[in-house]
Amino acid sequence: MRGLVPLIGDRRAGLPRVAAPVAADDLASAPRGLRAFWKALGPGVIVGAADDDPSGIATYSVAGAQLGPGMLWLALLTWPLMAAVQTMCARIGMVTGQGLAAALQARFPRRLLIVATAALFAANTLNLGADLSAMADAAELLTGVNSHLWVVVFGVAIGVATIQLRYGQIARVLKWLALTLFVYVIAAIHLGPNWPEVAHATFVPSLPTTHTGWQTLVAILGTTISPYLFFWQASQEVEEEKAMGRRRLDDRIGASQYELRARKLDVGVGTFFSNAVMFFIILTTWLALNRHGVTNVETSMNVAAALEPIAGRFAALLYTLGIVGTGALAIPTLAGSAAYALAETFGWHQGIDEPYLHARAFYAVVILSFLVGVTLDFANLNAVQALYWSAVLNGLLAPFLLLGILLVASDRVIMQGQPSSRLGRTTVAVTTVAMFAAAVAMFL
Image (cartoon, rainbow, N blue to C red; front, top):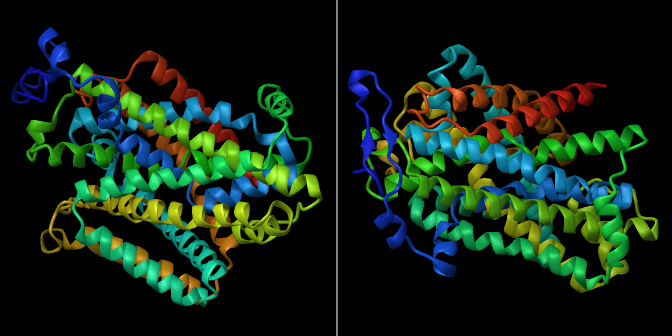
């Protein structure tokens, strides 16, 4: 028995194991109402919230400060694109019973995957270091204690929690941390926007007319549709199933229609939440900074410092607290996604639910990510430069990964007879073309 339904087929005979349609009794016994909605929320919401990490907040803030309302419409475009990609990654994890790197190995040469996962590790580590620095700067702004001390505190605390806590505990903590993103909604409403003006900027797109504007658009695409989220989404589907007692691969193969629909809801809510937060950050910095002539900001701390004299202590405090909360949410996903990808590529024992001694190589990658991230802060690496180079790596890596994901999700054999829908494949194909164009634009 596989979850709610039996599986049809036999892998030993070379036939795909496909989930049978959900029986009426299964649908009747499925949870409903608000309890069912909350129960369905999990990896998709965590991934969506993790997308709004401190580096993402900085990118959206720069967009609002430099371009005003010019990028508000982009949140409407990136939501369905991001949702389609993350739903496809979730489906791969749920149906194959393995993470994304393992699924890609079934279609592509291992040497190619080694290059991709090495690039992912490099980009994630740079991003992790920049996020730790942003959190530390925010903590220094709030407490007056030197940021170098806070980098060590945050790095050790989050690293130990990632290694010591089991998946169920981490998932619950991350789900609640996602609520910290509401501070940006509150901050925007606190500023009292002219909603008809906001609606016009949102629903009547205006393409950039300057080189800086196009660079900002590319940066937003790169920070919204990020490779580390692809790997984290698929791996967390596997962890969800392990937490339900499906420890063997055969027990995890295939997914019922109820499970797939529940995850689609989860991902839809998570990605909507992520893009809504992007919208409100751009709105906040447009109203508080751009309208007052403050356009030269490069980091989230520049934004926080500029907000206080214009928008008041409350808005600046909310903005700063959000950076700490989102960093605590995003950093485990940055370190964890690289560890999952490398472990699956090299066949290491892996999983956040595994004790340290049973998955030494997997946890070694996590520890190395944190050590390098903390070291980058003490080396006084320019956080803006770190984010730029991580964006370059992500911008180059994302479209190739999307192409691979699309091919895997369309393969009926790899997907056990449950490939992604035609609409899903079409949307991800459009996203892939857009990301290839963004990668080219990054150099032009």
